[in-house]
Image (cartoon, rainbow, N blue to C red):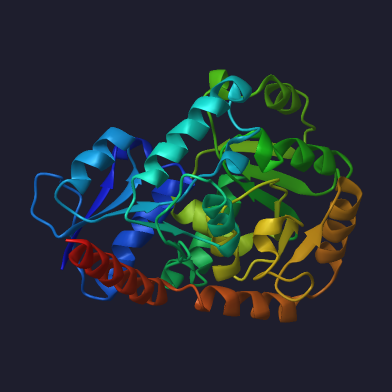
Length: 335
C-alpha cells in the first residue's frame, strides 16, 4: 500500500508537537516498509490526515479511506492562545467536523481516545497509538551535551532544570517561573517560543517579571536541544493538559529525570516515583527539584526508559500498518 501523509501548512509544523508527530509517522512507515508521499497530486491508496479543514477531508473521502489523527481536543486548546475563550466554540465545531468525517481516528493515548469518543458526533472507530519516539536520536552524546553547556555558559557543576514547549498558558510556564524564583541557585531554561501577539496577557506578564535565573531560550533545535535533554539535571514540565506530551517521551528517551503535573493523560502509563515524579502544586515541585539535585534516581530513569522502548518508532510502525489495513478492509466492505 501507499499512504498520503497529509497536512496543510506543513511549513508551520516544524516547531510544534504536531510537527514532531508528523516526522515520527514518516520514520514509523519507513521502519515497516510502507511507501508514503506528502504530495496530494501523487498516487496512493489511503490518506492519513494530520491537519486539514473538513472540506478537504470530504474531498479525499470521495476516492480514498481517510484516517484523521486526533492531535487536538477542546481540553488542550484551553488556556493556550490569546483570545482562546472567543475562539474555543469555533475550534470545537472544527473538531466535530473533522472527526465526524473520518473513516478511522488515531490518537496518541487512551485518555485522548476517551475525550474524542465523548464527542457525540464521532461515529468512526478510535485507536490509541502513541506518537512514538526514534530512540537513536536521543542516545548519549558528550559532544551534544558540551554544545548545550557552551551555548548557555554553564559551569560543570551547575544544576540546570529545563522546560520545553510553546509559550501557552496551559503548559504551566508561569509555574515554571515561580518555582525558579524560589530556587535562585538553580538555572532554569525554557525552550520554545510564540509570537507575542499570540501569548495570553498573563504569560507575557509572567515572562516580563521572571527572575534572573530563568532563561527564555526561544526555539532551539539540533545538537543543543538534544544536549539539553541529556545534560540537564531534570526536566520540569508542569503542563495542565496534554494528549500525550512528545517532550516527555523525548526526555524519557534521553534518560533525563522528569517532574510532571499529576494530570489524567499520564494516569495509566506513567507512575509516580516509578517512571517519573508527579506533583500537584509549586511547593511540591520545588521540593522535588531540590531532591533531584541531591539524590541519585537512576532506578526511576531506567524504568522510564522502558516506557519509551514500548513506544519506539518500530513498534508504532507496526501499529500504524495494522490501522491502515483495518481502514482499507472497512472501506472495501462498505463498498
